[in-house]
Image (cartoon, rainbow, N blue to C red; front, side):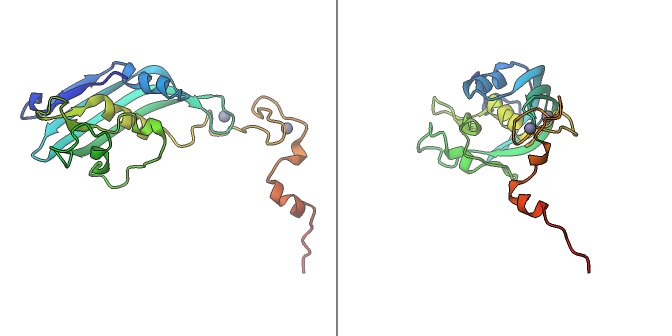
Length: 203
Ligand SMILES: [Zn+2]
Ligand SMILES: [Zn+2]
């Protein structure tokens, strides 16, 4: 993955604007973790960084267009990415100890409380968004890491090829958008099958 680390001391006092359109920022982890995403229109990140005494304000927008497998039928579903973000990255807590620890900064996370977390590896590909510079002098922030995180946050949890996607037949696996299959009667929740034969007596 192409890493873009910006030393905070290089950012102008009034903040700095950065444009990122190097596709390897996203394509790198997509390929590395074999994620089922295809970039249709180049992703582009605009990030404004404003260093503070105890961290860095981050504001920006990520746009582009990708395709991901439909949650129901697994065919490619195209979707626009348009993610605005506004967050605060606090400095790593222990500046002197373990300057290369990959997980230390993440635990102190973003100021925003409800950032979704999962245990998937690709979520942690660049967990250290802000770190002590490898030289030991000063703090630097990862534009590539920020923009990969925002990409993950921008993804819908259940991408759909269309709102009315009929999905796959649970019995034979046919794509029901293409053609109806002959096992229609067996579709539905099997746990309810015994109830289907019942008639409700009306009083
Ligand atoms: Zn679908
Ligand atoms: Zn079927």
